[in-house]
Amino acid sequence: MTEPAKPPAGTLSFEPLTPVSYLDRAAAAHGERTAVVDGDRRWSYTEFHDRCRRLAGALAPLARGRPVAVLAPNTHVLLEASFGVPWAGVPLVAVNTRLSAREIASILRHSEASVLVHDPVLDDVADAAVAGLPEPPHRIRAGEPYERLLAGATPTAIRPRDERSLLSINYTSGTTGRPKGVMYHHRGAYLQALAMVGHTGLSPSAVHLWTLPMFHCNGWCFPWAVTAAAATHVCLPKVEPAEVWRLLRTEGVTHLEGAPTVLSMLAHAPEASPLARTVKVATGGAPPTPAILRRMGRLGFDVTHLYGLTETFGPAMICDWRPEWDGLDEQVRARLKARQGVGNMISCAARVIGPDGRDVPADGTTVGEISLRGNNLMLGYFKDEEATRQAAPDGWFRTGDLGVVHPDGYVELRDRSKDVIISGGENIASVEVEQVIADHPAVSEVAVVAVPDERWGEVPAAYVSLLDGAEATEAEIIEFVRARLARFKAPRHVVFGQLPKTSTGKIQKFVLRDRARAGAERRIR
Image (cartoon, rainbow, N blue to C red; front, side, top):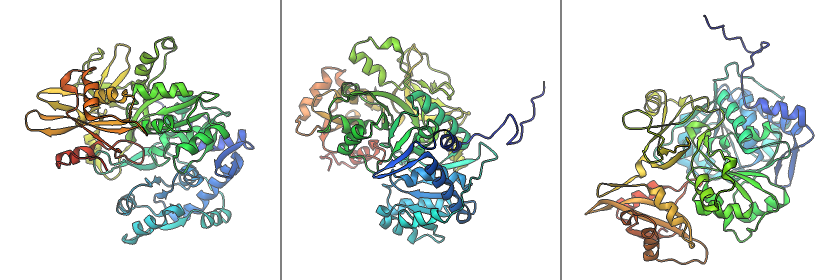
């Protein structure tokens, strides 16, 4: 039987999927309701829709078919660009605001950005980034220049004819090496946003606080997901625990996302106290420790653990909670919540592949590499076919993360392949040691990495950040681990201080490893 021909766009039974169409629907169905809160400014969905279309009208002749870059914190500007840039018919490049001028210049050059929209707080770094470019992009400064541009523009909405055409280019955070440009397509973002609506329970009554950087994986597709639900976006340019707790109470926030470090900041803030209602939190970027999950639960946060990468539009897997787990002991529930889980509702089932290329048994012990594919996988790396081939040698994207599959089918991360510590021939999972140390009452955050050792080749070292006012000694931390794990898994060194992180809150273990290799066994400054 021959397959029917694919219908052209705009026919009765086919319309190319694009996440920006969610704003059309929200404006039509919920036009008078609040769409965006940014400080003392508020816009309805009708106004938000009009502003995004005007941004598209202003950008289309300036972009000339090339990407538009945006360098801004979590303000209405980046949120509007999530719709206005695609409606201008060009890809969006949301730039990490914590990068250096040199790194930003590299992204502008590599992405061939035609326009740079930037926030005034980033004037200096924008000036330095474009200074050395042979063909600097046209610059638009947020604030009065941006508002004048919108006021004089003709509303425009260029629709994609091919739903797998390029929507955005997202540059990896650089925790594992040189950033690469990950290409997102309209279809994937549309479906991923739909999955986020379903899994987090977004609805028109939801109020979403932007604690997750919008530049990171396009905010895990939540700019489109929150809009699809016609919920309210509350912008937050900087994550300050006191301000987050204020907004939780004054704006009636119901949803937020962030790395485990954000959860830790909120849980241990002086302003922290149990909420009158449940706030749904999605976390990812690193496995949250059972200790922080327990603490967040007591404060009224319902935490869902997600897993994904830039290459997977953000969360590709979710620890899908089963109601039969509700009656379990608190500690057991926290350990179940810390698992990476199963593919989200629009993903293919995740695989954990052994060295022989076959799926490992679902025994909760055999380790393999987590591998993914499906509609929420990238088109590839921009202008880097070789890296694309290496990342998916057989049609399955190799994440570089090691995990096991439990008998119930849920995947649990054991480590990144580079983070496994091999000491005297024994494999030590740094995540396992980190979770034990995180249970110590004085510990706020911890990272465990391998450091060189003449006798054992390498041994674990723990880098520990303590809670304000708390005290602990190296010997105390080591003995705490030895009482709970095999002695060879305990760290040989404990270094106290602040941990180096990416702008999305991921602890930069490679920085710690580099320090160790250079003989920098000293306090983290």
